[in-house]
Amino acid sequence: MGTASDLVGFLKEQKEQEGREGFDRDGREWMTDVLNLIRQIEGWLSEPAKQQLVNLEEFGFAAHEEPLGEQHLTGLKIHAPKGRLIIVQPVARFVIGGEGRVDLLSGPRRVSLLRTKERTWLVARSEPNQVAYHVEPLDEALFSEILKDLLA
Image (cartoon, rainbow, N blue to C red; front, side, top):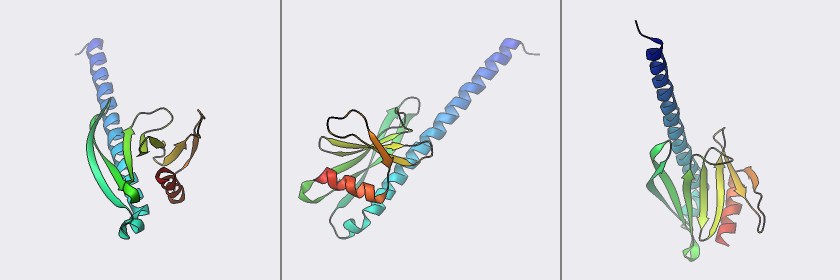
């Protein structure tokens, strides 16, 4: 028969394994949600892409984030007229105020998308000279408005 310390050791191992499995699931869900966001954006831009007004270029990259380890994520480059470029860049799964963050980058300008516990996306924007962020759900109309702002 085992001792209480054997049981404690066994239970600690089970708890650690449970934690790793949870992080593995979190990592898979994060990668899936990022890819779904990229696909949604590509869908919203399908008509401008068909008319060759924008060129969409997916790119893959490896990111390391504790405790998830190495992840293989997808980003998107949106090539627009006048040589303008917007990059849809996954940033991190673990962030303050959300369950993940993806940035829309155009030069020095940035708009952040925050993933919710419900696995939807919110837009977090600050006004010039303001510290607080204004947060609202991402939809096609808001995405179009953001794109126009970033390209202006």
